[in-house]
Length: 202
Image 1 (cartoon, helix red, strand yellow):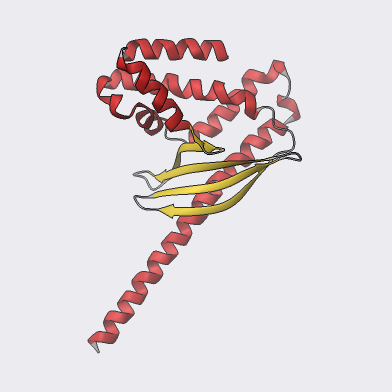
Image 2 (cartoon, rainbow, N blue to C red):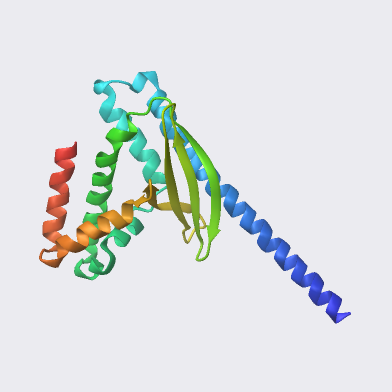
């Protein structure tokens, strides 16, 4: 009797874990689908086209992207071991400026959208409450692989913390730059340099 009871409990546990796993896959998939869909909708909006509407259009896209991104986590990952050089106030300032830099650096490419479609190929649930959503951005002339790394925060919400485009990680790329810069520099100087880059890219 105990043997069958243990098997029944084990089967129930495996079923519950499998259901939770499937739910996480669906939520992660839906997050990327909804986010890309909202950005594409903004870009297609005739009332937001043209240089005169650039500021308004970009503000709407930035709002959408920041709502699904953990900017602080991204900032910490890009700093890596250099994080110890930053005070909490400096870290907050860095996070704000860095998120602005990433946005203005990549937004011009996003605004070139014409007929692209984001196809989700796979959603993999990983250990430590993480997930990877594998996609291809397809146009009439080419396909570009883009992988979104997500994690589940303390509130149970999935958030993006890295993006790989054609195998190149945003976090890894910036971490290499910041690590080299901070060897003979200070957080204040790095933040100032990032502010200058934001102005140049705007």
